[in-house]
Each structure stands twice: as structure tokens, then as C-alpha cells.
Image (cartoon, rainbow, N blue to C red; front, side, top):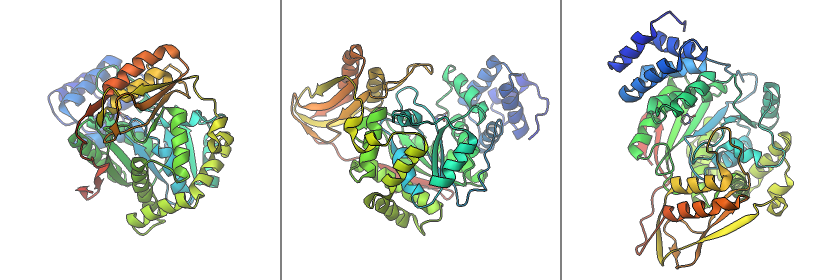
Length: 446
Ligand code: URA
């Protein structure tokens, strides 16, 4: 798409007045902004107009196209097999990439995974990987290809030449209150994923207190937009809506989540983690042509955990990316946080809710996350839940243990955690973990 010469003010006015922009007009704005020829204030005005008045499906696809082609688009066609990746819209305790990538790769489906860091209350795969001593996510394109060829998976960070427009636009959205827009989120996610050179994509779109989309209705709209864009770019795309009202699993924080992932790969994963893992991994195995149906894919996913092939694949991948494997097999070899403090139940009853957002913020305070992009993270910091929603508790019983190397963070983290937990006299109903599937035929209840 060429960048014809338009007038930026006219384009901003057009979106302000709820008109539809052409593909060329959107390309003009994105190209100019990426090349530093459009000011932050004009792009901010456009983003706010798009946030308030929306972008239709054609505009969202044009935005994705321009952002995708703002940098390199990897060509992995020389690597045999259908390349399949998964992306999550982000949550608390969401360590699924570490579990499902080796499951899927162990069947020979190439998984080229480019991931991000955590920001705010949500964790990021790169920070989790870097909590493994020695593990490097900063690899050249040649090394990326050769690891993918040898192990059918690779886990790396986004380089500056992959979708640079997204990097700039995301930073601007962050400071102009324009992040929570369905078409803008969809363009941001899909431009990065399509740049990886994938053939198919599975999306985990989360709803609830710990997700970007708090309501199921908004999550469904986001899932439909993501799938429509994927299909427009001729990539098979299947999305699931999954519950993020409470944290996923029991362990939150970078190393603690690696630990829970290793337990999961050895057959000891929590039920909620394994339910979503097998569903997503099974779909990836099916899309990678290694199963005739999603149900068969799910059975294969379970088998790969039961027979140890997925854990074996993870250890090999860790060695290939310079990580130490001893601590993955014997957690006592890891340097735990110096301070470990129990949080106790304030009354008898049942846990009625555990607000994932507040628990994510408590974990961030302990050192597991960043307050600004420049902050470092404490890999050993985080929270281990001893109880989850619907569990019975007695007053004074431990409901969680906080881990930190920064003693002064404990009071605020404990307070946030206590605010996150509601105890009532009745046992609440069980919520469904996965509620919908969305594919090219539209959404369906599961
Ligand atoms: N994740 C992204 O990559 N981009 C967004 O805009 C939101 C979540």
C-alpha cells in the first residue's frame, strides 16, 4: 500500500466526524508516524477519535496491515510444517505459554513464539523465562531459525524491527488513555503475531477482574475482531474466551510461575491451568495437522504430559537457549526470596472471590512487576496461593504466602491482598473456565 500525500488534519477530522477512512489514508497516518513525520499530538488526536468512534473491520484490518509492514515480516517457509503460535491478551498467573509450547512442539508442530514483558498487573513470558538462570531471549534471527528447526520451538523477545509502529503507538496509547479500544488492541496484537511468519494462531482472550476486558461481552467482541483480522490475512485463527476473575493456578510471579509450569509438565498442574492448557494445546496440535480433530488434539496434549515428552522438550529448549536445567528439576537449587510472609484469613467461611487485578498489583508491589517500563523485576518475588475461590477457610488459617527481597513492600502487598479476598458464609457456584470458542463461523458456547 503506497503512502499517498494526504492532509493529516483532514484525516483526523474525518474520524472525529465518524466517517470511514480508506486503507491508503490509514497507511499514510501509520507510515508517517513510524517515520517520525507525524507529530505525537496529531497521532494522539487520531487515536482518541478512533477510540471514541471506533474503527470498522476494514479499517482495523488496514491498521493491522500498515503496522505489520512497518518492519520485518519473517519468512519461515523453509522450515517444514505449519507454524502455529498462541497469544494471550494477558492475565495474572498466566504461565500457559511455558506449558503448551513444549507440548505442541513435541509433536513436531513448529511454535515460533515472540513474547513480551509484563507491564502493570499482568505478567510477561519474557520475564518468566529470564528467571531461569542463564536463559537468553535476546537471540539473532539466524539463531532463532536454527533453534526452531532443531527443537520445533523457540521463545524470543520482540526485536526493534518487528512491527516498530506498534511499539511507538503502544507507548503513545499508554499515556493518552487509548489502550482499552478493541480495534486498537486487535491491530497491536495481530501485527506482531503476523510478523512472526505463522500459518495459524490460537488466541486466549481473557475476561474478568484481571483482564484488559472486564466483561465477557467486550472479550467476545475483541475475540471476533481478532479472528476476523486473522482470517483476512489468510491465517487460520481460533479464539477462546477464558475466565480471569481469579489468578490462574496457585503461583504468581516469575520464578514461581516457572516452578508451577514445570510441575504441570510433570503431571502435577492445577486443574484450571491444565484445562485451559490442554484446550489451547489441543487446538494448536489440530491446526498443525498432527490431529484429525480438536478432541484428538486434546488427548494428544494430555499424552505428551503423561509420557514425559513435553517436559523433555522443555529441558532441551532451555539448554538450547543457554538456561540451566538443574533448578527446573530440583527447585531447592533456586535462590528463593529472603522474606516469606503468610497472609491469614480474617474470618471463617468460604472464599467468595479473589480479585485477580488486586492480587496482580500485590505481586507487582513485592517486586514481580514493573511500575515503569525502565524498572527491573525481582525474579524470585511473588505469591503462592494456599486457597482459591470456593475453598473453606478458618479464621487465622494461611491463605497465601508472599515472597520478596524488599522487606518494605510487605505491608502494602498484604493490604492489597487482603482487599482482594472476600470471605462469605455460603460456598459460591463454580464458574466456567472456558466459555466460548470463536472461529471463522462465529462464536459458539462451549
Ligand atoms: N497486548 C498488546 O500487544 N497490545 C495491546 O494493545 C493490548 C494488549
